Length: 249
Length: 353
Ligand SMILES: Cc1ncc(C[n+]2csc(CCOP(=O)(O)OP(=O)(O)O)c2C)c(N)n1
Ligand code: SF4
Image (cartoon, rainbow over all chains, first blue to last red):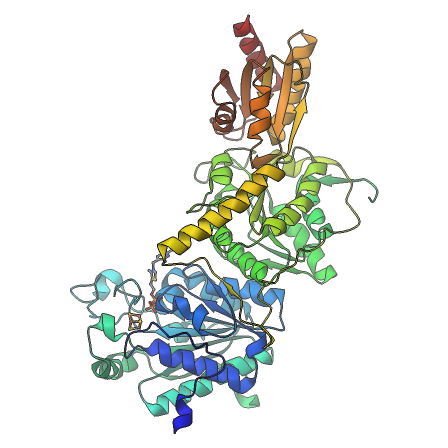
Protein backbone atom coordinates (compact mmCIF):
# COMPACT_ATOMS: atom_id res chain seq x y z
CA UNK A 1 0.00 0.00 0.00
CA UNK A 2 3.01 2.31 0.43
CA UNK A 3 2.90 2.87 -3.32
CA UNK A 4 -0.38 4.77 -2.96
CA UNK A 5 1.40 7.65 -1.30
CA UNK A 6 4.06 8.07 -3.93
CA UNK A 7 3.76 11.44 -5.59
CA UNK A 8 2.57 11.23 -9.21
CA UNK A 9 5.13 12.62 -11.66
CA UNK A 10 2.58 15.17 -12.92
CA UNK A 11 2.59 16.82 -9.49
CA UNK A 12 5.49 19.02 -8.41
CA UNK A 13 7.06 18.67 -4.98
CA UNK A 14 5.79 22.12 -3.95
CA UNK A 15 3.83 21.69 -0.69
CA UNK A 16 0.12 22.35 -1.24
CA UNK A 17 -1.54 25.10 0.77
CA UNK A 18 -4.93 23.43 1.14
CA UNK A 19 -6.62 23.09 4.55
CA UNK A 20 -6.72 19.68 6.27
CA UNK A 21 -9.56 17.62 4.84
CA UNK A 22 -9.93 19.79 1.74
CA UNK A 23 -10.95 17.91 -1.38
CA UNK A 24 -8.66 19.86 -3.71
CA UNK A 25 -5.56 17.89 -2.69
CA UNK A 26 -7.19 14.54 -3.48
CA UNK A 27 -8.56 15.79 -6.79
CA UNK A 28 -5.17 17.21 -7.84
CA UNK A 29 -3.74 13.79 -7.22
CA UNK A 30 -6.42 12.07 -9.30
CA UNK A 31 -5.80 14.45 -12.20
CA UNK A 32 -2.05 13.92 -11.97
CA UNK A 33 -2.44 10.14 -11.83
CA UNK A 34 -4.62 10.20 -14.94
CA UNK A 35 -1.99 12.30 -16.74
CA UNK A 36 0.75 9.90 -15.62
CA UNK A 37 -1.10 6.78 -16.62
CA UNK A 38 -1.85 8.14 -20.09
CA UNK A 39 1.74 9.36 -20.49
CA UNK A 40 0.58 12.80 -21.62
CA UNK A 41 2.35 15.09 -19.13
CA UNK A 42 4.77 16.44 -21.71
CA UNK A 43 2.01 17.66 -24.00
CA UNK A 44 -0.56 18.73 -21.43
CA UNK A 45 -1.36 22.37 -20.67
CA UNK A 46 -3.38 23.21 -17.58
CA UNK A 47 -5.50 26.29 -16.97
CA UNK A 48 -5.78 27.36 -13.33
CA UNK A 49 -8.86 29.32 -12.30
CA UNK A 50 -9.58 31.83 -9.56
CA UNK A 51 -10.50 30.19 -6.28
CA UNK A 52 -8.67 28.16 -3.67
CA UNK A 53 -7.09 26.14 -6.48
CA UNK A 54 -5.52 29.19 -8.13
CA UNK A 55 -2.04 28.02 -7.12
CA UNK A 56 -2.58 24.73 -8.93
CA UNK A 57 -0.21 26.25 -11.49
CA UNK A 58 2.53 25.57 -8.94
CA UNK A 59 1.35 22.03 -8.22
CA UNK A 60 0.88 20.50 -11.67
CA UNK A 61 4.11 19.68 -13.45
CA UNK A 62 2.57 20.53 -16.82
CA UNK A 63 2.78 23.92 -18.51
CA UNK A 64 0.20 26.14 -16.80
CA UNK A 65 -1.62 29.42 -17.34
CA UNK A 66 -3.72 31.19 -14.74
CA UNK A 67 -7.00 32.58 -16.07
CA UNK A 68 -9.17 35.44 -14.81
CA UNK A 69 -12.17 34.49 -12.66
CA UNK A 70 -14.53 32.38 -14.76
CA UNK A 71 -12.57 32.64 -18.00
CA UNK A 72 -10.67 29.36 -17.92
CA UNK A 73 -12.74 27.61 -20.62
CA UNK A 74 -12.14 30.54 -23.01
CA UNK A 75 -8.40 30.57 -22.23
CA UNK A 76 -8.32 26.78 -22.71
CA UNK A 77 -10.09 27.24 -26.04
CA UNK A 78 -7.35 29.62 -27.18
CA UNK A 79 -4.59 27.26 -26.07
CA UNK A 80 -6.24 24.27 -27.75
CA UNK A 81 -6.97 26.11 -31.00
CA UNK A 82 -3.36 27.27 -31.14
CA UNK A 83 -1.93 23.76 -30.71
CA UNK A 84 -4.65 21.12 -31.13
CA UNK A 85 -2.17 18.31 -30.45
CA UNK A 86 -1.81 19.50 -26.85
CA UNK A 87 -4.05 18.06 -24.15
CA UNK A 88 -5.73 20.98 -22.39
CA UNK A 89 -7.59 20.97 -19.10
CA UNK A 90 -9.08 23.54 -16.76
CA UNK A 91 -9.45 23.12 -13.02
CA UNK A 92 -12.32 25.23 -11.68
CA UNK A 93 -14.41 25.76 -8.57
CA UNK A 94 -18.17 26.22 -8.52
CA UNK A 95 -18.14 30.01 -8.19
CA UNK A 96 -15.67 30.24 -11.03
CA UNK A 97 -17.46 27.82 -13.34
CA UNK A 98 -21.14 28.14 -12.50
CA UNK A 99 -21.50 31.83 -11.59
CA UNK A 100 -19.06 34.26 -13.15
CA UNK A 101 -17.95 31.80 -15.84
CA UNK A 102 -21.31 30.36 -16.85
CA UNK A 103 -21.20 31.75 -20.38
CA UNK A 104 -17.66 30.50 -20.98
CA UNK A 105 -18.58 27.04 -19.67
CA UNK A 106 -21.82 26.65 -21.58
CA UNK A 107 -20.34 27.82 -24.87
CA UNK A 108 -17.20 25.73 -24.60
CA UNK A 109 -19.53 22.75 -24.15
CA UNK A 110 -21.83 23.89 -26.95
CA UNK A 111 -18.89 24.21 -29.34
CA UNK A 112 -17.77 20.72 -28.42
CA UNK A 113 -14.42 22.24 -27.58
CA UNK A 114 -11.96 19.37 -27.30
CA UNK A 115 -10.87 20.17 -23.74
CA UNK A 116 -11.37 18.60 -20.32
CA UNK A 117 -12.85 20.50 -17.40
CA UNK A 118 -12.30 19.36 -13.83
CA UNK A 119 -15.12 21.04 -11.95
CA UNK A 120 -14.85 21.01 -8.17
CA UNK A 121 -18.23 21.48 -6.54
CA UNK A 122 -17.84 22.23 -2.84
CA UNK A 123 -21.07 24.23 -2.55
CA UNK A 124 -19.27 27.35 -1.35
CA UNK A 125 -16.81 30.10 -2.25
CA UNK A 126 -13.72 28.82 -0.47
CA UNK A 127 -11.05 31.36 -1.25
CA UNK A 128 -13.00 34.45 -0.30
CA UNK A 129 -14.05 32.99 3.02
CA UNK A 130 -17.29 31.07 2.62
CA UNK A 131 -19.89 33.00 0.67
CA UNK A 132 -22.90 31.48 -1.06
CA UNK A 133 -22.05 29.70 -4.31
CA UNK A 134 -24.36 28.95 -7.24
CA UNK A 135 -24.20 25.37 -5.97
CA UNK A 136 -24.91 26.11 -2.28
CA UNK A 137 -27.81 23.97 -1.14
CA UNK A 138 -31.28 25.26 -0.22
CA UNK A 139 -31.13 26.34 3.40
CA UNK A 140 -27.31 26.25 3.49
CA UNK A 141 -25.83 28.83 5.85
CA UNK A 142 -22.95 30.81 4.41
CA UNK A 143 -21.44 34.23 5.05
CA UNK A 144 -23.78 35.79 2.47
CA UNK A 145 -26.77 33.60 3.27
CA UNK A 146 -26.55 33.87 7.07
CA UNK A 147 -30.18 32.76 7.51
CA UNK A 148 -29.79 29.88 5.10
CA UNK A 149 -30.12 29.93 1.32
CA UNK A 150 -33.68 31.12 0.72
CA UNK A 151 -34.74 29.77 -2.66
CA UNK A 152 -37.59 32.30 -2.81
CA UNK A 153 -35.20 35.20 -2.95
CA UNK A 154 -31.98 33.82 -4.40
CA UNK A 155 -33.23 30.84 -6.33
CA UNK A 156 -31.99 27.32 -6.67
CA UNK A 157 -28.58 25.72 -7.05
CA UNK A 158 -27.25 25.17 -10.54
CA UNK A 159 -26.95 21.49 -11.44
CA UNK A 160 -24.07 21.80 -13.86
CA UNK A 161 -23.80 18.21 -15.07
CA UNK A 162 -27.54 17.94 -15.73
CA UNK A 163 -27.55 21.30 -17.53
CA UNK A 164 -24.53 20.69 -19.76
CA UNK A 165 -25.61 17.18 -20.66
CA UNK A 166 -28.46 18.77 -22.63
CA UNK A 167 -25.99 20.31 -25.06
CA UNK A 168 -25.25 18.40 -28.24
CA UNK A 169 -21.64 19.58 -28.12
CA UNK A 170 -20.87 17.82 -24.84
CA UNK A 171 -19.24 14.41 -25.33
CA UNK A 172 -18.85 13.15 -21.80
CA UNK A 173 -20.17 14.51 -18.51
CA UNK A 174 -19.97 12.60 -15.24
CA UNK A 175 -20.50 13.56 -11.62
CA UNK A 176 -18.26 11.83 -9.09
CA UNK A 177 -17.37 12.33 -5.41
CA UNK A 178 -14.39 11.84 -3.13
CA UNK A 179 -16.12 10.74 0.07
CA UNK A 180 -14.94 7.10 0.14
CA UNK A 181 -12.50 4.77 -1.55
CA UNK A 182 -15.08 3.38 -3.92
CA UNK A 183 -16.12 6.83 -5.11
CA UNK A 184 -12.52 8.01 -5.34
CA UNK A 185 -11.79 5.04 -7.60
CA UNK A 186 -14.77 5.90 -9.76
CA UNK A 187 -13.60 9.51 -9.87
CA UNK A 188 -10.14 8.42 -10.99
CA UNK A 189 -11.66 6.31 -13.73
CA UNK A 190 -13.90 9.15 -14.93
CA UNK A 191 -11.05 11.66 -15.05
CA UNK A 192 -8.88 9.25 -16.98
CA UNK A 193 -11.71 8.56 -19.39
CA UNK A 194 -12.25 12.28 -19.97
CA UNK A 195 -8.57 12.77 -20.85
CA UNK A 196 -8.67 9.69 -23.05
CA UNK A 197 -11.65 11.06 -24.94
CA UNK A 198 -9.77 14.31 -25.47
CA UNK A 199 -6.72 12.52 -26.86
CA UNK A 200 -9.09 10.72 -29.23
CA UNK A 201 -10.56 14.04 -30.36
CA UNK A 202 -14.01 13.20 -29.06
CA UNK A 203 -14.85 16.71 -27.86
CA UNK A 204 -15.95 18.42 -24.69
CA UNK A 205 -15.56 16.50 -21.43
CA UNK A 206 -16.36 17.65 -17.90
CA UNK A 207 -16.03 15.80 -14.65
CA UNK A 208 -17.93 17.35 -11.75
CA UNK A 209 -16.31 16.31 -8.49
CA UNK A 210 -18.46 16.73 -5.38
CA UNK A 211 -15.95 17.86 -2.79
CA UNK A 212 -15.53 19.33 0.67
CA UNK A 213 -14.60 22.66 2.22
CA UNK A 214 -14.38 21.82 5.94
CA UNK A 215 -12.99 25.25 6.75
CA UNK A 216 -15.88 27.25 5.37
CA UNK A 217 -18.51 24.66 6.17
CA UNK A 218 -17.34 25.10 9.79
CA UNK A 219 -16.85 21.34 10.24
CA UNK A 220 -14.02 18.96 11.05
CA UNK A 221 -12.73 16.98 8.06
CA UNK A 222 -14.62 13.88 9.26
CA UNK A 223 -17.87 15.74 9.80
CA UNK A 224 -17.45 17.41 6.43
CA UNK A 225 -17.46 14.01 4.70
CA UNK A 226 -20.65 13.20 6.57
CA UNK A 227 -22.23 16.50 5.54
CA UNK A 228 -21.30 15.84 1.92
CA UNK A 229 -22.96 12.42 2.04
CA UNK A 230 -26.10 13.56 3.82
CA UNK A 231 -26.68 16.83 2.00
CA UNK A 232 -24.79 17.07 -1.26
CA UNK A 233 -25.15 13.59 -2.68
CA UNK A 234 -28.98 13.57 -2.51
CA UNK A 235 -29.09 16.93 -4.33
CA UNK A 236 -26.26 16.10 -6.73
CA UNK A 237 -26.71 12.45 -7.71
CA UNK A 238 -23.56 10.77 -8.97
CA UNK A 239 -23.37 9.13 -12.35
CA UNK A 240 -22.78 9.55 -16.06
CA UNK A 241 -24.98 12.33 -17.41
CA UNK A 242 -23.76 12.19 -20.97
CA UNK A 243 -21.58 9.83 -22.91
CA UNK A 244 -21.87 10.23 -26.65
CA UNK A 245 -19.64 7.23 -27.19
CA UNK A 246 -21.06 4.90 -24.53
CA UNK A 247 -22.00 2.10 -26.96
CA UNK A 248 -18.70 2.32 -28.76
CA UNK A 249 -16.45 1.92 -25.72
CA UNK B 1 6.10 44.92 -51.96
CA UNK B 2 3.21 43.60 -53.98
CA UNK B 3 1.07 45.81 -56.22
CA UNK B 4 -1.43 48.32 -54.87
CA UNK B 5 -5.02 47.23 -54.34
CA UNK B 6 -8.05 49.26 -53.36
CA UNK B 7 -9.30 48.23 -49.93
CA UNK B 8 -11.57 49.25 -47.10
CA UNK B 9 -9.70 50.11 -43.89
CA UNK B 10 -11.20 47.19 -41.97
CA UNK B 11 -10.29 44.74 -44.72
CA UNK B 12 -6.79 46.15 -44.93
CA UNK B 13 -6.32 45.43 -41.22
CA UNK B 14 -7.48 41.84 -41.71
CA UNK B 15 -5.36 41.22 -44.82
CA UNK B 16 -2.34 42.88 -43.22
CA UNK B 17 -2.72 40.66 -40.15
CA UNK B 18 -2.66 37.63 -42.42
CA UNK B 19 0.37 39.03 -44.23
CA UNK B 20 1.97 39.44 -40.79
CA UNK B 21 1.56 35.72 -40.21
CA UNK B 22 -1.40 35.94 -37.85
CA UNK B 23 -3.40 32.70 -38.15
CA UNK B 24 -5.60 33.02 -35.08
CA UNK B 25 -8.49 35.45 -34.79
CA UNK B 26 -11.12 35.51 -32.04
CA UNK B 27 -13.91 38.08 -32.08
CA UNK B 28 -17.49 39.06 -31.55
CA UNK B 29 -19.59 41.12 -34.01
CA UNK B 30 -20.01 44.85 -33.44
CA UNK B 31 -20.40 47.79 -35.81
CA UNK B 32 -18.32 49.43 -37.28
CA UNK B 33 -15.63 46.74 -37.35
CA UNK B 34 -17.53 43.60 -38.27
CA UNK B 35 -15.87 43.47 -41.72
CA UNK B 36 -12.68 42.39 -39.97
CA UNK B 37 -14.41 39.33 -38.50
CA UNK B 38 -16.23 38.61 -41.76
CA UNK B 39 -12.98 38.84 -43.70
CA UNK B 40 -11.22 36.51 -41.27
CA UNK B 41 -14.13 34.05 -41.35
CA UNK B 42 -13.68 33.80 -45.10
CA UNK B 43 -9.89 33.75 -45.31
CA UNK B 44 -8.68 31.82 -42.25
CA UNK B 45 -10.11 28.40 -43.15
CA UNK B 46 -8.52 28.70 -46.61
CA UNK B 47 -5.02 29.24 -45.23
CA UNK B 48 -5.06 26.79 -42.35
CA UNK B 49 -5.86 29.47 -39.82
CA UNK B 50 -8.41 29.70 -37.03
CA UNK B 51 -11.40 32.03 -37.02
CA UNK B 52 -13.66 31.66 -34.02
CA UNK B 53 -16.69 33.74 -33.13
CA UNK B 54 -16.77 33.82 -29.35
CA UNK B 55 -19.85 34.12 -27.14
CA UNK B 56 -18.78 37.59 -25.99
CA UNK B 57 -15.87 40.01 -26.12
CA UNK B 58 -14.91 38.75 -22.67
CA UNK B 59 -14.48 35.26 -24.06
CA UNK B 60 -12.84 36.46 -27.27
CA UNK B 61 -10.08 38.27 -25.41
CA UNK B 62 -9.53 35.28 -23.13
CA UNK B 63 -9.21 33.03 -26.18
CA UNK B 64 -6.57 35.49 -27.37
CA UNK B 65 -4.86 35.09 -23.99
CA UNK B 66 -4.89 31.32 -24.39
CA UNK B 67 -3.50 31.41 -27.93
CA UNK B 68 -0.90 34.03 -27.00
CA UNK B 69 0.14 31.82 -24.07
CA UNK B 70 0.62 28.99 -26.54
CA UNK B 71 2.98 31.25 -28.46
CA UNK B 72 1.10 31.99 -31.67
CA UNK B 73 0.56 35.37 -33.33
CA UNK B 74 -3.03 36.22 -32.45
CA UNK B 75 -5.48 39.09 -32.64
CA UNK B 76 -8.97 40.29 -31.86
CA UNK B 77 -10.94 43.30 -33.00
CA UNK B 78 -13.91 45.20 -31.67
CA UNK B 79 -15.43 48.62 -31.22
CA UNK B 80 -15.82 50.73 -28.10
CA UNK B 81 -18.46 48.85 -26.01
CA UNK B 82 -16.69 45.60 -26.85
CA UNK B 83 -13.34 47.04 -25.81
CA UNK B 84 -14.82 47.83 -22.39
CA UNK B 85 -15.57 44.13 -22.05
CA UNK B 86 -12.12 43.18 -23.24
CA UNK B 87 -10.46 45.45 -20.72
CA UNK B 88 -10.29 42.85 -17.97
CA UNK B 89 -8.41 40.64 -20.40
CA UNK B 90 -6.08 43.47 -21.42
CA UNK B 91 -5.07 43.93 -17.80
CA UNK B 92 -4.41 40.19 -17.47
CA UNK B 93 -2.47 40.20 -20.74
CA UNK B 94 -0.29 43.01 -19.45
CA UNK B 95 0.12 41.24 -16.11
CA UNK B 96 1.05 37.98 -17.85
CA UNK B 97 3.39 39.73 -20.33
CA UNK B 98 1.52 38.36 -23.33
CA UNK B 99 1.79 39.83 -26.83
CA UNK B 100 -1.29 40.24 -29.03
CA UNK B 101 -2.94 42.77 -31.31
CA UNK B 102 -6.24 44.33 -30.29
CA UNK B 103 -8.04 46.51 -32.82
CA UNK B 104 -10.50 49.17 -31.66
CA UNK B 105 -12.49 50.77 -34.48
CA UNK B 106 -13.98 53.42 -32.23
CA UNK B 107 -17.59 54.55 -32.20
CA UNK B 108 -19.39 57.18 -30.13
CA UNK B 109 -20.08 56.61 -26.43
CA UNK B 110 -20.58 56.38 -23.51
CA UNK B 111 -22.94 53.44 -23.05
CA UNK B 112 -24.27 51.93 -26.22
CA UNK B 113 -23.56 55.33 -27.75
CA UNK B 114 -23.80 55.32 -31.53
CA UNK B 115 -22.24 53.60 -34.50
CA UNK B 116 -20.62 56.65 -36.06
CA UNK B 117 -16.88 57.39 -35.80
CA UNK B 118 -15.37 58.69 -32.62
CA UNK B 119 -12.10 59.07 -30.75
CA UNK B 120 -13.62 59.01 -27.32
CA UNK B 121 -11.76 55.89 -26.16
CA UNK B 122 -8.47 57.79 -26.00
CA UNK B 123 -8.29 57.73 -22.21
CA UNK B 124 -9.37 54.08 -22.13
CA UNK B 125 -6.61 53.16 -24.59
CA UNK B 126 -3.78 55.26 -23.22
CA UNK B 127 -4.58 55.18 -19.51
CA UNK B 128 -5.22 51.47 -19.23
CA UNK B 129 -8.90 50.61 -19.44
CA UNK B 130 -8.35 47.63 -17.21
CA UNK B 131 -7.10 47.71 -13.63
CA UNK B 132 -3.56 47.92 -12.33
CA UNK B 133 -0.25 49.53 -13.25
CA UNK B 134 0.19 48.83 -16.94
CA UNK B 135 0.41 50.20 -20.45
CA UNK B 136 -0.39 48.96 -23.92
CA UNK B 137 1.27 50.10 -27.08
CA UNK B 138 -1.33 52.25 -28.84
CA UNK B 139 -0.93 52.88 -32.57
CA UNK B 140 -3.09 55.39 -34.43
CA UNK B 141 -3.14 55.12 -38.24
CA UNK B 142 -4.53 57.90 -40.45
CA UNK B 143 -4.81 56.13 -43.80
CA UNK B 144 -5.72 52.71 -45.08
CA UNK B 145 -2.07 52.12 -45.98
CA UNK B 146 -1.05 52.99 -42.44
CA UNK B 147 -3.77 50.75 -40.99
CA UNK B 148 -2.13 47.87 -42.83
CA UNK B 149 1.41 48.89 -41.99
CA UNK B 150 0.75 49.50 -38.28
CA UNK B 151 -1.12 46.21 -38.01
CA UNK B 152 2.02 44.41 -39.11
CA UNK B 153 4.28 46.56 -36.97
CA UNK B 154 1.89 46.11 -34.04
CA UNK B 155 2.42 42.35 -33.94
CA UNK B 156 6.19 42.78 -34.07
CA UNK B 157 6.23 45.42 -31.32
CA UNK B 158 3.90 43.41 -29.10
CA UNK B 159 6.21 40.40 -29.37
CA UNK B 160 9.39 42.42 -28.97
CA UNK B 161 8.19 43.89 -25.67
CA UNK B 162 5.83 41.08 -24.60
CA UNK B 163 2.86 43.37 -24.16
CA UNK B 164 -0.55 43.93 -25.76
CA UNK B 165 -0.70 46.39 -28.64
CA UNK B 166 -3.84 48.28 -29.59
CA UNK B 167 -4.51 49.60 -33.07
CA UNK B 168 -6.78 52.57 -32.43
CA UNK B 169 -8.84 53.51 -35.47
CA UNK B 170 -12.34 54.87 -35.91
CA UNK B 171 -15.48 54.15 -37.90
CA UNK B 172 -14.56 56.45 -40.81
CA UNK B 173 -11.18 54.88 -41.33
CA UNK B 174 -12.67 51.40 -41.07
CA UNK B 175 -15.04 52.15 -43.95
CA UNK B 176 -12.69 54.33 -46.04
CA UNK B 177 -11.45 52.90 -49.38
CA UNK B 178 -7.86 53.66 -50.40
CA UNK B 179 -5.06 51.94 -52.29
CA UNK B 180 -2.87 49.69 -50.16
CA UNK B 181 0.36 47.89 -50.69
CA UNK B 182 1.06 44.85 -48.53
CA UNK B 183 4.50 43.37 -47.88
CA UNK B 184 5.36 39.91 -49.20
CA UNK B 185 6.91 38.63 -46.01
CA UNK B 186 5.89 38.58 -42.37
CA UNK B 187 8.05 40.00 -39.58
CA UNK B 188 10.17 37.36 -37.93
CA UNK B 189 8.60 35.68 -34.92
CA UNK B 190 10.35 36.55 -31.68
CA UNK B 191 11.78 33.64 -29.66
CA UNK B 192 9.21 32.52 -27.10
CA UNK B 193 10.88 30.21 -24.60
CA UNK B 194 8.11 31.13 -22.15
CA UNK B 195 5.29 29.79 -24.36
CA UNK B 196 3.10 26.89 -23.25
CA UNK B 197 3.77 24.19 -25.78
CA UNK B 198 4.08 21.28 -23.37
CA UNK B 199 7.20 20.46 -21.39
CA UNK B 200 7.94 17.41 -23.55
CA UNK B 201 9.27 16.14 -20.21
CA UNK B 202 12.49 17.89 -21.18
CA UNK B 203 12.22 21.17 -19.29
CA UNK B 204 10.69 22.66 -16.15
CA UNK B 205 7.05 23.60 -16.58
CA UNK B 206 6.32 27.09 -17.86
CA UNK B 207 3.82 29.15 -15.87
CA UNK B 208 1.97 32.17 -17.22
CA UNK B 209 0.52 34.08 -14.34
CA UNK B 210 -0.20 37.55 -13.01
CA UNK B 211 -0.81 36.64 -9.36
CA UNK B 212 1.49 37.32 -6.46
CA UNK B 213 0.26 37.58 -2.91
CA UNK B 214 3.68 38.82 -1.82
CA UNK B 215 3.63 42.62 -2.07
CA UNK B 216 7.36 43.08 -2.53
CA UNK B 217 7.37 40.50 -5.31
CA UNK B 218 4.43 42.11 -7.10
CA UNK B 219 6.13 45.48 -6.72
CA UNK B 220 9.27 44.04 -8.28
CA UNK B 221 7.28 42.63 -11.22
CA UNK B 222 5.70 46.02 -11.80
CA UNK B 223 8.99 47.87 -11.56
CA UNK B 224 10.58 45.43 -14.02
CA UNK B 225 7.68 45.88 -16.39
CA UNK B 226 7.97 49.66 -16.18
CA UNK B 227 11.67 49.39 -16.98
CA UNK B 228 10.57 47.68 -20.20
CA UNK B 229 8.00 50.44 -20.76
CA UNK B 230 10.79 53.02 -20.37
CA UNK B 231 12.64 51.31 -23.23
CA UNK B 232 9.49 51.48 -25.36
CA UNK B 233 9.19 55.19 -24.58
CA UNK B 234 12.82 55.74 -25.54
CA UNK B 235 12.86 53.70 -28.75
CA UNK B 236 9.43 53.34 -30.27
CA UNK B 237 7.84 56.79 -30.42
CA UNK B 238 6.35 57.60 -33.83
CA UNK B 239 4.86 60.88 -35.07
CA UNK B 240 4.55 63.04 -38.15
CA UNK B 241 5.17 66.76 -38.40
CA UNK B 242 3.75 68.88 -41.20
CA UNK B 243 4.88 72.49 -41.79
CA UNK B 244 5.89 72.83 -38.15
CA UNK B 245 9.35 74.29 -38.68
CA UNK B 246 8.22 77.93 -38.73
CA UNK B 247 4.74 77.40 -37.31
CA UNK B 248 3.21 79.83 -34.83
CA UNK B 249 0.11 77.72 -34.35
CA UNK B 250 0.25 73.96 -34.26
CA UNK B 251 -2.72 71.66 -34.60
CA UNK B 252 -2.34 68.32 -32.84
CA UNK B 253 -4.50 65.41 -33.89
CA UNK B 254 -4.35 61.71 -34.65
CA UNK B 255 -6.15 59.43 -37.06
CA UNK B 256 -9.06 60.93 -38.96
CA UNK B 257 -8.77 64.22 -37.03
CA UNK B 258 -5.27 64.69 -38.43
CA UNK B 259 -6.57 64.41 -41.99
CA UNK B 260 -9.03 67.22 -41.34
CA UNK B 261 -6.33 69.21 -39.54
CA UNK B 262 -3.97 68.93 -42.47
CA UNK B 263 -6.54 70.47 -44.82
CA UNK B 264 -7.16 73.27 -42.34
CA UNK B 265 -3.41 73.93 -42.03
CA UNK B 266 -3.17 74.27 -45.82
CA UNK B 267 -6.11 76.68 -45.81
CA UNK B 268 -4.52 78.71 -43.00
CA UNK B 269 -1.18 78.88 -44.85
CA UNK B 270 -3.07 80.15 -47.93
CA UNK B 271 -4.35 82.94 -45.71
CA UNK B 272 -0.83 83.75 -44.53
CA UNK B 273 -1.06 82.15 -41.10
CA UNK B 274 1.98 80.11 -40.12
CA UNK B 275 0.15 76.96 -39.12
CA UNK B 276 1.51 73.43 -38.77
CA UNK B 277 0.36 70.00 -37.76
CA UNK B 278 1.74 67.50 -35.29
CA UNK B 279 0.36 63.98 -35.58
CA UNK B 280 1.16 61.41 -32.89
CA UNK B 281 1.25 57.93 -34.46
CA UNK B 282 2.03 56.21 -31.17
CA UNK B 283 -0.48 57.46 -28.60
CA UNK B 284 1.35 55.40 -26.03
CA UNK B 285 4.22 56.03 -25.94
CA UNK B 286 3.09 59.62 -26.56
CA UNK B 287 5.66 61.74 -28.45
CA UNK B 288 6.18 64.00 -25.43
CA UNK B 289 9.73 65.11 -26.13
CA UNK B 290 9.09 66.03 -29.77
CA UNK B 291 6.00 68.03 -28.90
CA UNK B 292 7.75 69.76 -26.01
CA UNK B 293 10.59 70.71 -28.34
CA UNK B 294 8.09 72.14 -30.78
CA UNK B 295 6.73 74.32 -27.97
CA UNK B 296 10.06 76.19 -27.88
CA UNK B 297 9.18 77.76 -31.24
CA UNK B 298 5.48 77.28 -31.73
CA UNK B 299 3.38 79.63 -29.61
CA UNK B 300 -0.09 78.11 -29.58
CA UNK B 301 -1.50 74.60 -29.80
CA UNK B 302 -4.90 73.26 -30.76
CA UNK B 303 -6.07 69.75 -29.97
CA UNK B 304 -8.35 68.51 -32.75
CA UNK B 305 -10.28 65.47 -31.65
CA UNK B 306 -13.53 63.54 -31.97
CA UNK B 307 -13.98 63.55 -28.20
CA UNK B 308 -14.75 65.95 -25.37
CA UNK B 309 -11.15 66.87 -24.60
CA UNK B 310 -9.06 63.76 -24.02
CA UNK B 311 -6.02 64.11 -26.30
CA UNK B 312 -5.70 67.72 -25.11
CA UNK B 313 -4.53 66.49 -21.69
CA UNK B 314 -1.52 64.75 -23.23
CA UNK B 315 -0.74 67.84 -25.29
CA UNK B 316 -0.79 70.03 -22.18
CA UNK B 317 1.28 67.53 -20.24
CA UNK B 318 3.81 67.14 -23.05
CA UNK B 319 4.44 70.88 -23.35
CA UNK B 320 4.03 71.32 -19.59
CA UNK B 321 1.36 73.97 -20.19
CA UNK B 322 4.08 76.32 -21.49
CA UNK B 323 1.80 77.54 -24.30
CA UNK B 324 -1.94 78.04 -24.58
CA UNK B 325 -3.76 74.89 -25.76
CA UNK B 326 -7.31 75.12 -27.07
CA UNK B 327 -9.77 72.43 -28.00
CA UNK B 328 -11.38 72.03 -31.42
CA UNK B 329 -13.70 69.07 -31.30
CA UNK B 330 -16.90 67.30 -32.19
CA UNK B 331 -18.17 64.17 -30.54
CA UNK B 332 -20.94 61.56 -30.55
CA UNK B 333 -20.15 60.50 -34.11
CA UNK B 334 -19.65 64.01 -35.56
CA UNK B 335 -16.40 65.02 -37.26
CA UNK B 336 -14.93 68.54 -37.11
CA UNK B 337 -14.93 70.22 -40.53
CA UNK B 338 -11.78 71.81 -42.01
CA UNK B 339 -13.63 75.16 -41.65
CA UNK B 340 -14.11 74.61 -37.94
CA UNK B 341 -10.43 73.78 -37.50
CA UNK B 342 -9.44 76.76 -39.66
CA UNK B 343 -11.57 79.03 -37.46
CA UNK B 344 -9.78 77.67 -34.37
CA UNK B 345 -6.41 78.32 -36.02
CA UNK B 346 -7.41 81.88 -36.89
CA UNK B 347 -8.65 82.48 -33.37
CA UNK B 348 -5.42 81.17 -31.85
CA UNK B 349 -3.30 83.18 -34.33
CA UNK B 350 -5.26 86.37 -33.58
CA UNK B 351 -4.46 86.06 -29.88
CA UNK B 352 -0.73 85.93 -30.66
CA UNK B 353 -0.65 89.39 -32.20
C1 LIG C 1 -13.51 39.38 -11.21
C2 LIG C 1 -13.34 38.82 -9.86
N1 LIG C 1 -14.37 38.85 -8.99
C3 LIG C 1 -14.23 38.35 -7.75
C4 LIG C 1 -13.04 37.79 -7.35
C5 LIG C 1 -12.90 37.29 -5.93
N2 LIG C 1 -12.91 35.84 -5.81
C6 LIG C 1 -11.78 35.14 -5.70
S1 LIG C 1 -12.03 33.50 -5.53
C7 LIG C 1 -13.72 33.70 -5.56
C8 LIG C 1 -14.65 32.55 -5.38
C9 LIG C 1 -14.08 31.24 -5.73
O1 LIG C 1 -14.95 30.24 -5.36
P1 LIG C 1 -15.00 28.85 -6.10
O2 LIG C 1 -14.91 29.05 -7.57
O3 LIG C 1 -16.19 28.13 -5.62
O4 LIG C 1 -13.64 28.10 -5.69
P2 LIG C 1 -13.14 27.58 -4.26
O5 LIG C 1 -12.37 28.70 -3.65
O6 LIG C 1 -14.34 27.19 -3.45
O7 LIG C 1 -12.28 26.42 -4.57
C10 LIG C 1 -14.04 35.05 -5.71
C11 LIG C 1 -15.41 35.54 -5.76
C12 LIG C 1 -11.97 37.81 -8.29
N3 LIG C 1 -10.78 37.32 -8.00
N4 LIG C 1 -12.16 38.31 -9.53
S1 SF4 D 1 -11.01 27.13 2.23
FE1 SF4 D 1 -12.10 25.26 1.70
S2 SF4 D 1 -11.73 24.93 -0.50
FE2 SF4 D 1 -10.22 26.38 0.28
S3 SF4 D 1 -8.44 25.18 0.82
FE3 SF4 D 1 -9.63 25.43 2.70
S4 SF4 D 1 -10.99 23.67 2.73
FE4 SF4 D 1 -10.16 23.81 0.67
